[in-house]
Image 1 (cartoon, one colour):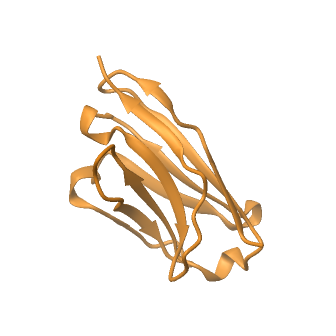
Image 2 (tube, rainbow, N blue to C red):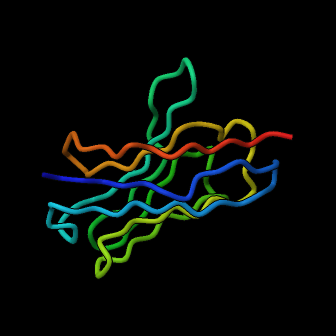
Amino acid sequence: QVQLVESGGGSVQPGGSLRLACVASGIAFRDYTMAWYRQAPGKQREWVTEITSDGSPMYRDSVKGRFTISRDNAKNTVYLQMDDLQPEDTAVYYCKVGGRTYWGQGTQVTVSS
């Protein structure tokens, strides 16, 4: 019933930028914290950032100053603006509903020279 669809991934050089989007359906979007996670090959999925229902963001230290999470409740969409991307950011990025085991299909982000 709940569906999350990520988009916006791609391949960029170090220092490049990408803007990810996740469109949610089947939930009262405005009531939930939304989060972005990522998973690199051979690694566990890790939390990257989240934004509360009232718009308060939080970031893991390694992306502070480079990534910006935002949401548009009218569009049921959460965004992740990624600037100054580095090879260590290479992963499949997933969005998640706070407190629930709902995941999208993921979108691939590749940063390489």
